[in-house]
Image (cartoon, rainbow, N blue to C red; front, top):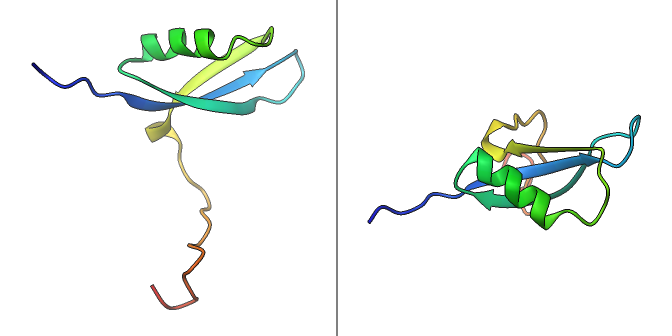
Length: 75
């Protein structure tokens, strides 16, 4: 039996037109189709006008914080 791989997805929503997209949570799912279903089921507490799931691996970091215990020049 093969192991099911669950990818991490990030969820963004908009409560009404003109509002900014807001990150409201994350979820794990084995496919994009199931990620959409899970997002609707898990985060249905509001009447969202828009909802998007993005695979976490598709997010491109622009700036990341330094580690809390790292000092400049020491790693």
